[in-house]
Image (cartoon, rainbow, N blue to C red; front, side, top):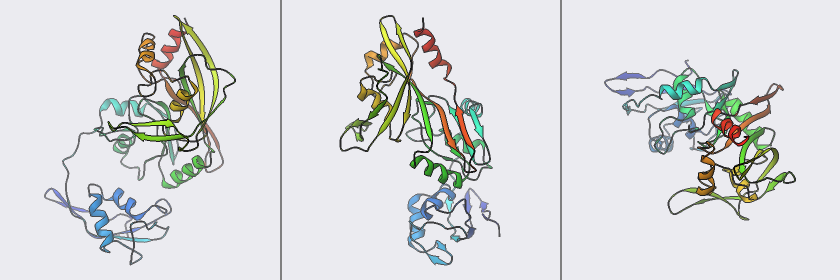
Length: 327
């Protein structure tokens, strides 16, 4: 039996037959609803949950609930699901494809690490059709499972991990949870960061403003959050002072480095959410046009025991800012 039986197509709509899928170790551990959403492209989630509730989805000939986790060796029955073909959406731009193809820092049979360019979201949404993950899936249709291991803000550049196998995704998520992956960032902050300040330990809480904008604040009700810091270089130019710091998040909270820098009194320059417009305006004169935050290095151990350290060079625009400040 083929792992995924082919669907027949006719007159602008898909007419799939019953599919019998053998679950292997790569797909084991996923909730059945999430798995079905992934393989039934174009089928609304409401329809997926309906066929589960009606008992049309079977695992080993038995009904299951949406939260059932697939096991290695399960036989999954997927009923015929008819859905009108969507109008094909535009492909990712040639510019994005070119940038991502040239940004690969490391690749093996299970993992890709790229130097994500600033300005490209890691995934689509909010009017963005193609982020990093959608573009990679588009240009690598032969890859069965491409998934983001973690995320970077749209304006943050640098090391980003994409798993090519579910087993690698599960392994790296466990490593991140246990604090065994070291992520090192470079940030340019306003002012003179003191060498003695090597740790910011402040709980972070997500908030949503009336406008709908999401912001993170230091709050005792928030989640425990720690970031380690090291001064790399200080700059004084035209009556302005800035410090290039190395930031290593011990925990992995949304906007953690950005908010911890602000809390310490040294906001990241170019940050339009947490740094004042006036401070950002002054440093635009030195060529800084976006958030100066770069995921410079990843240190991890692969499942086979091999230590891996990947460096992403500072982008030319940020390097140019430092060059200007040095004179």
